[in-house]
Length: 110
Image: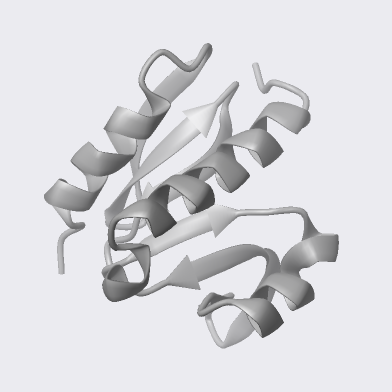
């Protein structure tokens, strides 16, 4: 499955003008990076991937529809997955802002 191009365009609208923004095709999806650090992605498996502080992962999973990203059978704290229906309308903006804020807090990659 290819990433949702409509979702990617919606993400673009929220991150437009963000300093040090790049887009990169990764893992079948389209990632949005700030200073070389992934903030959010339109997932190749559908829905949204969001990078967050590892320490907030459990709370966010417990209080929202997000779940931990699973790669090769292993849960990845600090990486959340949301289904397409969970990022409809205004919900998307808050998740994108959360991912962008976290990526901004990290040292830029060269």
